[in-house]
Image 1 (cartoon, rainbow, N blue to C red):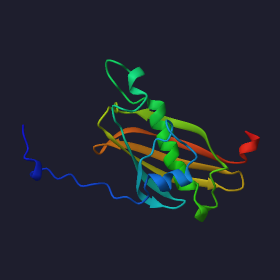
Image 2: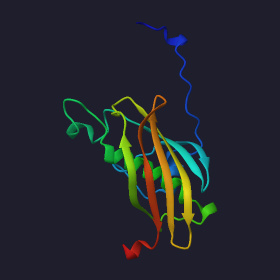
Image 3: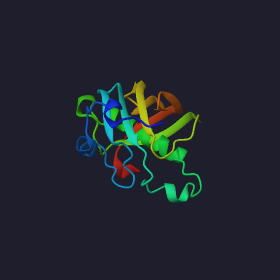
Length: 163
């Protein structure tokens, strides 16, 4: 089926935080920075961000050569990075030096994510125990409105020198 170019209109995701602002917050760099844009943001509460999955991503040649699929662990890592964006904000007392991915529970992968997909990740703070330095978050990742991955995430605040 052919579509005339001018009749195809796909709305762009809004940009609340661009890649440069993300890089100012997260310490991750290529090839491990897995968040391209934040499209919704509520400091210390929730964020929605996207990862544009392309055939040029460095994991596809090995996972798998005949059927390129985004590794589940990288989806989880991308979601954790979105969680970091929620918590690593000056408004909530965070800094890039003192926040770590501490654990995951109840993770389920619902559908494969392939090149050309836009992974939309929502991370929401469920519980913050400042006294113990632990944040519990719920995460869901979607492609075309369908859940592809979900789970519960634990984030820990602490000194980078104590790891």
